[in-house]
Image (tube, rainbow, N blue to C red; front, side, top):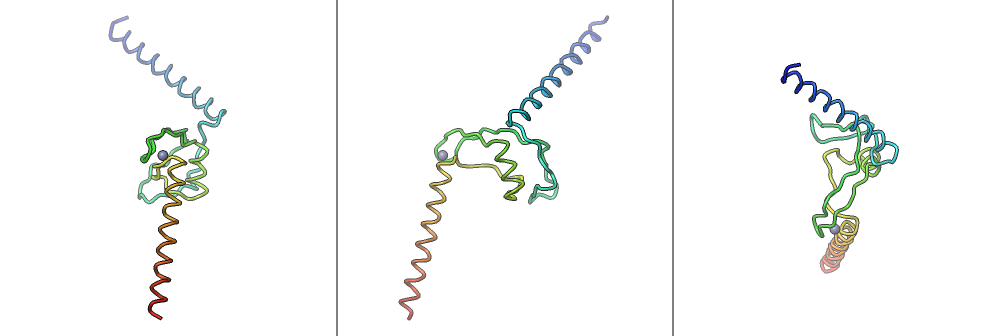
Length: 125
Ligand SMILES: [Zn+2]
């Protein structure tokens, strides 16, 4: 066997092996819930040619506010993209804690705005 042929054989075998590994980890993921199959029909997007995933994978991200690393689970992604109609381009930015704080801050701003408008309306009367 020529060296070239040997090399080719090795690469083919290596490729086959990594493919099997990927398939095994996909199977395992589907079983333990870290991988969830998507339903492309339920996915919405703002893009003309969206890249729709076949699977969702547990995904780690760092919170923009506090830097905490949180896992956005495959299950949660499916729920967000398919049930809550979040766009497929959407990604989490903040951890749960910071998201809650942010929501409360926004609610407070809204409350103050409404209060301000009511005060103004009273003055005009
Ligand atoms: Zn955070």
